[in-house]
Length: 226
Ligand SMILES: C[S@@+](CC[C@H](N)C(=O)[O-])C[C@H]1O[C@@H](n2cnc3c(N)ncnc32)[C@H](O)[C@@H]1O
Image 1 (tube, rainbow, N blue to C red):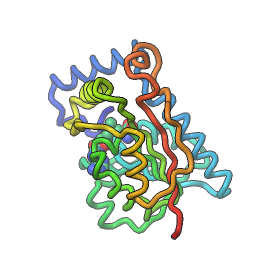
Image 2 (cartoon, protein in one colour):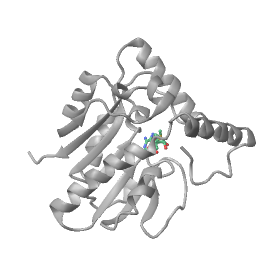
Image 3 (cartoon, protein in one colour):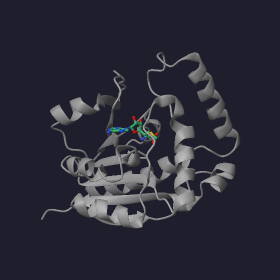
């Protein structure tokens, strides 16, 4: 994962990023390939249902790697990325807004919010607050996150998170969701889960062997009027 503005990253960190990216390429660690495919399918469903071009909010977008794939779809009108760092990134279909500005100033509604590998960084126990806020800007929220399955699985996830985010000063969580805490999060955010993929294969090769599909889930939440 790379930020738009890499100029402030030290030479040592840049070297680490290069080594880490090369290891990923060689050992099946491409995380964007399958993730963008599933997001693409969901976008397609929403487009065919609404029969109008769609707008997407990529919450915790990082370098917008997934959005950069989605923007190629003719029926995607615009994608707004939100994250914590400062950046003036903008292209024809993509634009970036910093977290504080977004929640202070946004008046727009989106057809879809995607939140990919972000909620566990916000915190398993606090993430419902963000989901509640985001349910006000879109009816459809797609989450990709991790499930832990006991002590070793948690430590493995922490190690992989550390490896993936070392150069970017992203907080590494002490715990991840399990089935129960995920269900509790949904309940507290007043959203309804319309579909969940409990085991989602994100990687290939060695990466898939180390962190297999039971550690990844994709959930489609919908805002339902009370
Ligand atoms: C593992 S990266 C995922 C980036 C991107 N979604 C992707 O899948 O390539 C996690 C991202 O969550 C962002 N993040 C962490 N806490 C956040 C918060 N409170 N609000 C918005 N973004 C946050 C981090 O800055 C980081 O870019």
